Length: 260
Length: 108
Image (cartoon, rainbow over all chains, first blue to last red; front, side):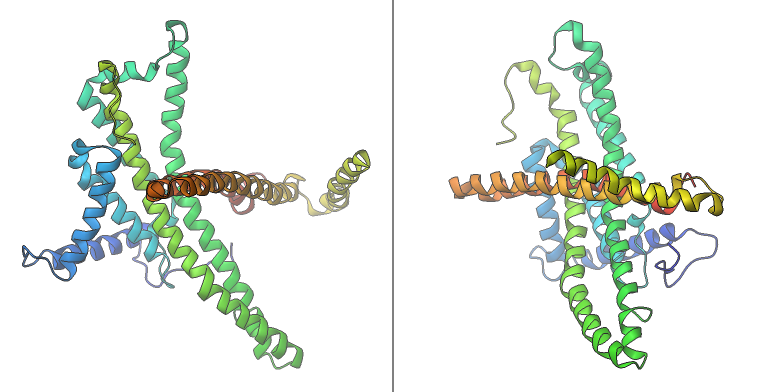
């Protein structure tokens, strides 16, 4: 990765990059929250209005997926969502690396989700009932097998959350780095500026095409992927939480009409 | 026709092995390194193709359902986006394995 790697603009000595930029994201989010919550007015305007819209979107998603009793999880879900969104968008700025391009940050978010939804399920139903629901609606002979399968699939969830977020971010970055390398001063543009006639024509036209492609297609695609991956992470968190809570409904014999 | 295609495909895959076998003793390492690069490329191609097939089916049935019931279009679109991201994540896992093979090079 030597030729396409580029270090970020500033580094704190002795602290890994992803931790430094996590602090940058934290400062940005805390600063925005502080500015938005000064002089809280009943009729919101400006930044407070914007953040109220954002939180209402989270609230409506929670109402759709978990139901009205999910409102207490809004802090967890909105924090995860806004942190991952801000980290993803930070990685798009040239000169900065995003925290989510490092496996440690995404694994941390996934582990938070994993322990949270188990804790929420156990606190709601008690440990034994919660574990009993791992065995599913199968006949008694198959229950141990079902338990093992459920444990494996529950362990696969934080793994898949980590790798999905990490892979999407890093894949986009490697693609962008290779495109920059191909069209930059060591590639097409360098060939165009090198003085040879063939270079000026082919390098100029090719470089221009690649610049338009990058600015017009790749960057919007990466912005879309940033939003989409944050949305998917939050949606899966909500689905896991709703799966942990709603087991209690099965006892009554009627399914709760939360998903329609 | 089909058997000759299969034999031709196997021959194409064997040629890099023959070429690398001539190189490897001078290079002083095992053959696993060059072959892992080959495998990374093929794995990513397979994953991308199959992921595209799966996502195409998902989008096709989502669009069918939206045409059948335009009132439910927003809900169907949400489910479609979630389904697409989950299918895509399988190709992303293959991408991560390919990156491990190419950049971390666990077995030289």
